[in-house]
Image (cartoon, rainbow, N blue to C red):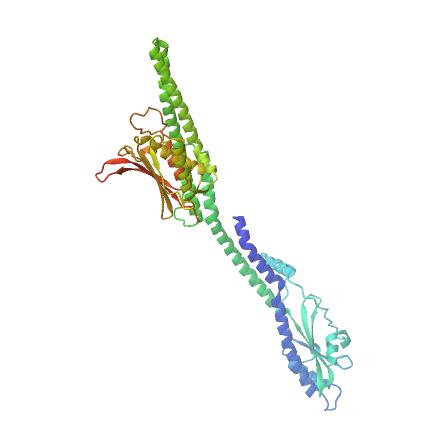
Length: 519
């Protein structure tokens, strides 16, 4: 929450700080005031050059009419005009000239006056603004009654016929603008007029703009904090709720704890909550599966153990050699059965870890099946059953997966088909592609799947063996492992009966579907 607020506010702070520090607004106002003052000074200087001289050949300013012109033209304004002769001396100053003047009354504060809290805050704010405002470098203002042109470079320039402006600083830190223009008659310089204007009003305007900027900044900052708080509650609070729920699930006993789902949210938070909820559900399902698997394992192992216990008890009381031999054969079969169960159970228990950690690679199912079928035919594992497979085109049936586990699936399906096929029967292996999916089929000519057992054949320890086959020869985990491997690869496996036109069952067909690997 704090980070979100800081990131959202820092850009606003930098922007406002730059506005207050650069202070270009003040300089623009000073430039505009200087231009207006130059025009005003030129007009007054022109009037002096035309009316305050004795005649066309005059080389100096007539002081009496000059003072009248200054009083008439400068008096109504708050500006100050000083007139300098060509020798450099000041001959007139509007500050001391009679005219349309009046007394200015200013109320004084009481001696025991104490500023209010608001005034104190405003004063502190003004001090802060003055501290961060960019200072304007300017020479000191000279305000003596006996000042000469040599002390004011701008006046000296005007006596040389050049209009010059200069920004100067008073003792109290305020700025004044000086504009010096030559007083001319037929291009002859008769003197110099210096117009001085205070910038207190400019400072007041700048201060007002700064205060307005501060107010806008405070309002924008408050809005930013509120929006950041809203954003934080929208993002941070749901994540915190999910984290605490996950911690309760980790610490909880039983299933009373669950991950809250923000079902009404269609954003990433909603996706996260649904994913965590699904993950928790999958974890509980996995726990159920482990529990069921442990119970099934215990049940399957207890059967041969019970048989072995009975055989051992009978051996102890039986003295007939033929009975003892038969019981020993039973014990041998039960030991083999337990060994086979332990091997298959170990393989099934490692399957999840191997599928999680295994490295997938691009696999050519056509070449894999062709190689596997050739191995069955070469080693004689298919006995007197014929295995047919004709489509082994390379580079067509490509999938992504773990090669060893997929090979185990095909061996389980082919072994299962061979065991159910009659003597001289045929096991057909086919492969094809449809809608970016690879379809693999293994078909036998056996008795088929019992009605209603199409889903049960993939359960752990479920065994539906052909008649005449020795009991306990299979653990019932082969098809369950095959289904787990195929589903882990994003595919599916089903079984169906192959029927004739009259509806007679002619065998069973396992169909495996896997997504085609990207090109």
